[in-house]
Amino acid sequence: MELYELPKGWVWTRLVDACQYLPTGVEKFDEDIEYYSTGSIHGTSYVPEGIYSFSERPSRANRMGHKRDVLQARMAGTNKALLIGENLDNKLFSTGFIQLRAFNCCVGMSSYIHYYVQSRKFLAQRDALATGSTQVALTDSRAEQITFPLSPLPEQHRIVSKIEEQFTKLDAGVEALKKVKTQLKRYRQSVLKSTMEGKLTEKWREEHKHKFEPASALLEKIKEERKKNTKEKYKELPPVDTENLPELPKGWCWVRVGEISEMIQYGTSEKAGNDSSGIPVLRMGNIQDGKLLFEDLKYFPRDWLRLDDFILHDGDVLFNRTNSAELVGKTAVYKSHYPTALFASYLIRVNVNRNAYIPDVLSFFINSFYGRKYIASVVSQQVGQANVNGTKLSLMPIPFSPLPEQHKIVEEIEKRFTVADEGEKAVEKSLKQAERLRQSILKKAFEGKLVPQDPTDEPASVLLERIKKEKEKLDADRKVKRKGRRVKKKKFLKQRS
Image (cartoon, rainbow, N blue to C red; front, side, top):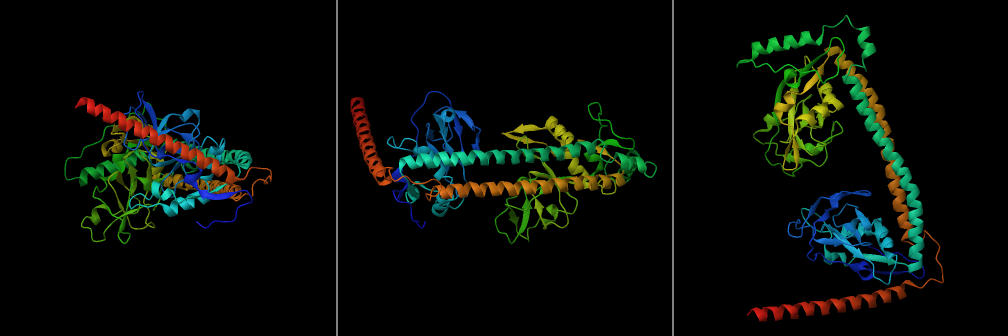
């Protein structure tokens, strides 16, 4: 990284020379301890990955955090910084973090370091120095190259105070934006719930009440057609128990997914690769908020022998059968304008009878309150993952309305969802602006432009000398301890022999 000119009294140094860069390793402990990985950090909330004894802890649970220690993720492209407080003191942390600790002669410097490792100045260096094939991350040896703008200690305190003042205002705005996002999600769910109860198209239905036959009549035709065309004996699904289901409008009826489906099929379990010249395979992560996202893809070669078995067609409903409990069952519809794609084993394809049911209506229902409620009632847990198999999916009760009304349902939902999408885009834009402002504040802070300098402050060069002396003393103490342990071990072995 190119070093820019610092204000008078500041110095450039290496980060590892300005604070303790702690190695991995923990001493034996007796009680079970909470463990936090980089995945445990979600903004300002921290959820332990588990609670472990010394002997049963995961191999990566090899850091012990102490109050005022600073942690930042090693992995390139991430920004998961943490200043350990009372609630996380003496907890286990992953080796996926680097761990920094201010020296005793630098009271209050931990917060300054914490903000620095969140700045683009630090993150750009970490990402540039990171190495690895599968996971690109910063190694301990390469971390020694990271530079650090050290300001006088009193100025550090003024900088931290100013950052916290401005971040408090910024955080309040971000929190308000996040509430809007939550409200938009609730609005979508409210729209879906209202639709599946027949309320959204109530006026339209009244105006067209004599024009269409009831859905029950169409259902009987579907059953008769199946009985004629099925080679094996037709097996009718059990009737829907409507006791705990809402009452449907006149002309609607409850059916099961299997009754309006031509095919329910699991995706391929064969391993896909990274060659983007092939055909993309959609996986569970590609279903987000009822939509298919063509991001973070894997691929199959275009000459793969089983291509035709798993190629997606317009109107295929994709159901995520295995995921975490809160995400299992998320659903979306594949459209003809999407890139040609296949689907993987954690997804189920539902091919609905298009003469009776619109795929989008099925997807909307599964993603609604009632669909989620059914999924929660039939889900099974397998090795930490929730699962809903094809049989349970086929038995899901869904509202069946006349086909013309289904078209109206899709029109009304999409009209309202478009408004919600525009609102969400505006929120996302504001959140990105907030993050840019956050980085702008940090940039000014570590260029010495956020607060005025005080010529009476002790120069950072003097502080660096004190740090150097304390570091030398710590290193000498560690050598004495290591030597003492070696002597003790040698005596022990001698006694045993």
